[in-house]
Image (cartoon, rainbow, N blue to C red):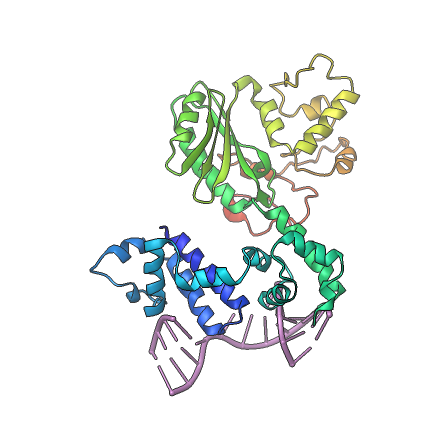
Length: 366
DNA sequence: AGGCCAATACTG
DNA sequence: CAGTAT
DNA sequence: GCCT
């Protein structure tokens, strides 16, 4: 059992205890122990199995939690946690993660309505039942509804920060393969979105196929979903970020990068524009012939070059004809991994990420 | 035995 | 005032 | 619950 996993069980239990209204200081102890374990550079399980050592020697871990940890290592859970899971619905922890709902409200909701799923919660809000409870009103119903939407949007996605680090590590590994020309992140990572659903990497060069093999054999890559000569997909890290690596001919690199950077909506829009301009006649099968011009928007579609297709709205895109000054995206540089330069002028994406210099996004001006 | 991060704003 | 968030 |  992994340290992070053990810490997670402890934190979950703390959350449930909070819902059940137990002593706040005891709860804090669970959380303190969890964070101590996360920050430990050494395997807790190994310590547990070593008769020479004692868990209670670690700061934040006393007799009680040491016992819990031993139980976790032995059977994957511990008494306190089992008891809590028995008392509250499985979604209790999810509910805790939606904005505007805290432990007290969740408990109240459970006591009165036996809400056990987000769908039920959503329905109660719509049917205006929430306001029947003390200290809850129409405003909270709205807030919960928004919170649920937000929660669903972020579910299964990963913070840009995490994806960027994964990309950096994988790119370095693949670039080291003999005969690989370039390895470039595409997709929403390249668009600089705050969260990323999966990671797309493009590889060129005669070593591309070997790079796919290196990818699926990478130590932090597992659960290979598919592996052919042109594409491989697998999951990365314990978090299970899905990564797709595509081998593309050098000649198609530009078009491929454009296409796989997306967004999908953006591509649809570009395509419609091209269609309108009568440029698609010879291209029924969805292939992209214009390999040499990554920036075919400028040369063919008369759109200004920006360092990325930054997922702006189509109306916005429509309004950006090229302008004579040609001042679009002039101050951009490219990092070795093509991650930094990918973001460029961040356009109209809502909520620009700030403080991300450590990712190499040096050109975010905000 | 007794402390454990604190201050502030918004909502109901 | 109680609960939640920052 | 943990720590002093």
